[in-house]
Image (tube, rainbow, N blue to C red; front, top):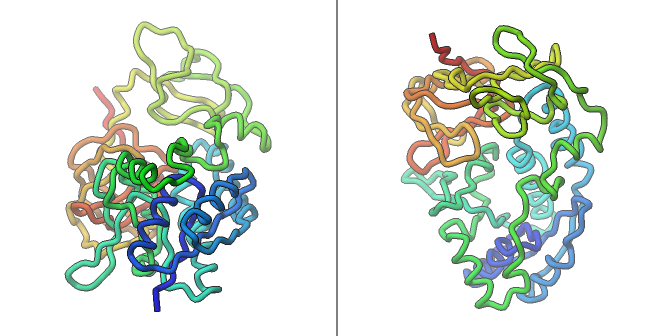
Amino acid sequence: MHKKVVLGLSGGVDSAVSACLLKEQGYEVHGHWLDIGLGGQADAEAVAARFGIAFSTGDIRRELESSVMGPFRRDYLAGRTPLPCALCNPTVKFPALFRYAEEIGADFVATGHYARIVVDEGGEAALCRGAHRNDQAYMLARLPREWLPRILFPIGGYEKPQVRELARALGIPVADKPDSMEICFIPDGDYAGWLEAHGATPPPGNFVDRAGNVLGTHKGIHHYTIGQRRGLSIPAGHRLFVSEIRPQDNTVVLSNGSDLMADTVWGEDLNRLADLTEGEEVTVRLRHSKAETPARFYPEETGGRLELLEPARAPTPGQMAVLYRGDRVLGSLWITAARRIIPH
């Protein structure tokens, strides 16, 4: 009997090619489209029809609101910069796929993420980077360790151009469909506009410098993140950067950027995906970019501390610190604070 797999079928090219690859590997594929209230079911159905796979739908709007969209709003109002996709994967998307897998007796769930599950020498399933530059393992670093043996990432060894070429060769109807934005519930990318349309937002306030001098008026703290340079509209003889966001008095601190480097980062809610020893040297990614920093990790009661072996720019509360050993993802923390290197 073929092993069953529930594939998150979004209607995009990545999940479509994943469906084909899984079928070629002998799996009985069940495409499951997750409804967030913005449409897209027709594309997913067309892919399922193209490959002759079972198709079903699940409504995740309520869970998305309570577990992702609500915290997204609260974080911005508190002066943090949230990372909703990293929160959605373990709390909404993958749980919905696993629930359907349990309903139909499927062995695995799969998605079109550019990441890999590799079984190590001890027989343990490990989350690893995608094989090429489209790596998305960072956004999966909150998944529980015990789920990993039942997850498949069929395109984890491919680059995006290869996936599109495969899609065209297979006659997939969404082969040239544009990539979706990272925040699925804000398809136009205007997060500040979305916040303003979904509840009260902070009023304008003062831009200030480190000494407290007023430099101008900001549009509301939800428009800014640590390290931001664009969109400040403050005349100055040098470039200005957001150095600190202070929700308690509705001010945004600006500087010349020399105070953005940090040598220590603290985080909470450690999600261990591999064994970690105190003081172990790892590399850490402090935002969804390619930049990584060597560090030593020290567990603490509510999370952990990263002593950076090279200074890192603008670690930001609300973002995620992801720890690596080579290609393997060791775990993650939500960043709460950083110790800045203040120039003399």
